[in-house]
Amino acid sequence: MSYLLWKHIHLTCVVLTFISFSVRAYGMLTVSPWLNSRIARILPHIIDTVLLVSAIVLTIILHQYPFVYGWLTAKVCALIVYILLGTVALKRGKTYQLRLFALIGAYLAFFYIVAVALTRSPNLGLLPF
Image (tube, rainbow, N blue to C red):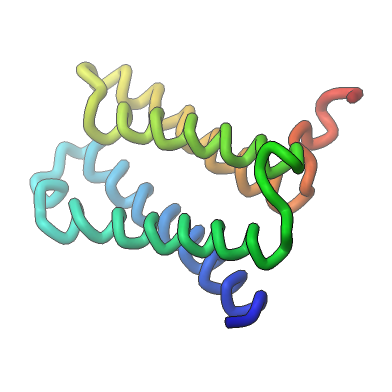
């Protein structure tokens, strides 16, 4: 398959992941019972798996790898932060305030990942080096 196809799959999954996370965050904030539905538990994992596979395929196609290229390393590190904060926000946070704080952090990490992808710069011009 071609680079453009994988890129479109990846970008589509980025949007779907954002929508899925936002819908589940709304459900968490409003304490909605549908968060326990089968689709709410399974669909995000399917989307995120396709997103991860497309990212791996793109790194292979482009020969640009994390820990070789700084911007990709920053994306991978921010992805780990996003996942950890997202699990606290949606599942593991013991208090509403902790979940809300983690949710804000997860959104900041997500937007950082997108900004790094668009600029291919890990510091986004914020740091002098």
